[in-house]
Length: 366
Image (cartoon, rainbow, N blue to C red):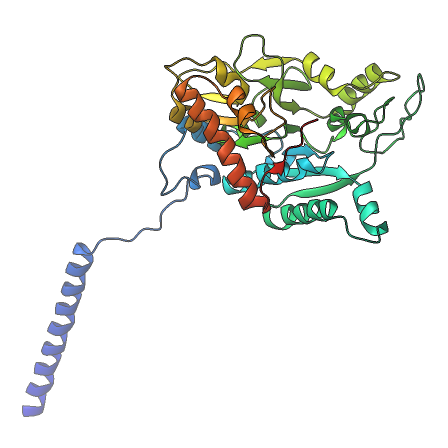
C-alpha cells in the first residue's frame, strides 16, 4: 500500500516538473529576440562605401543595378605605354582604380623591344630596369594585365592590308614615331572587349564610379572622346572605344597609305563636352582652371570630379620638377582655382612617390 502511494506521488511530481519546464521554455522563447540571418542585397559597388562617408549616391545606385554589356570582365581601362616616363603614370592610375575597387579590367600595353633590350644588354639600364620593375609591380599588386606588343608593320604606301594579319596593332605607318609604331586606334582591334576606356597620361582618378558609369551608357559611334568643360575645347582627356572588326577595318582603310597623326585623330573624333553642373565634373583639365572666377570652390571641385587631366601648355607635365617662375606663370590667378591647381599637382607628386617610389624628374630646358 505504501509502495503504491509512493509510486503515484512520484509520477505526479515528475509530470508537474515536466509541465513546469515546458512552461518556462515557452516563456523564454516568447521574450527572447529572434536571430534571423540577414538577406544580402548590397552589391560589391555599394559595399565598398560601408562605414565611409556617402559619396555620389546617384552613381552608386546606378551601377548597383546597371552592369556593362557582357559584364565587368568585358570592359576595361587601358594604357598604351610608349615612353618610360609614362610607366609610372599608368601604374598610379591603376593603383587608384584598385583602391577604389573598380570592377573593370586593367590592361597595359608596352613595347616588346624593352624586353629584347633588357635581355641583350650587358650592363643594366637603370631607366629600363625601373620601368620593368613598375610593370611587374602593377601586375602583382594591382591586378593589371600586361601585354608586350610589336610595332605596327610599315606595309608601304597604297599596299592593302592582309586580312589574316593577327598583329595586335596593324595600322599603316609612314613615320617611325612612337605614335605610329603603337597607334591608339589599334584598340579597336581588341574585339575580346565590348568597351575600353583610354585615360590620357598624367591624370588623377578622383572618383572611379563616375568613370565606370561610361561602361554602361549607349554609344552611337565606335570612338568617342570626352573633353573638359571649356568652350572651344577639342582635346580629349579620355577616349572610349567599342572594338569591332567592322570599326577597325573602316579606320584602317581610312588611314592606309597616310601618316598617322594621333593629334589629328583626337581632334577629329566625335567629342562629348563635359558640361559641369554645380561643380560636378566627369573630367576636368588643369589648364581650364585659369578660366574660373572667384565663385569657384576648390574643395567642391576636388571632391566632385571624376578624372583630372594634368595638362598645361606652359609646362612639360606633372612628372617634372620645373622652375618656380614657370609654375607661377601657369598657375590660375583665382585664389580658389589656384588652390585646386596646386592640390592636383601635389596629389600627383605624392602618389608618384607612394605608388612608384619615384620623385619628380629633373626638368632640362631645351
